[in-house]
Length: 97
Image (cartoon, rainbow, N blue to C red):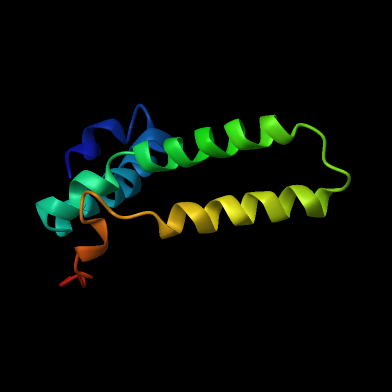
């Protein structure tokens, strides 16, 4: 790749780039409909925000297990919500290379 010119002055960077750049481009092996979901963490951010909001309301938990029960119940509730963007309809894609 183009990283050969870096090898003399920056050998660690060149080694890292040869691996990391190739790995980061694997997202393009997927169809465009899948890529938009893979490149963003919006869904995860929303889940974390909802968990924070709900656990703050409870604020005091008698033990760690009670907090875990609440979190698992919230995650199950979020999993049961309808999928407005049709994410569940995405087909599993196998890599060809």
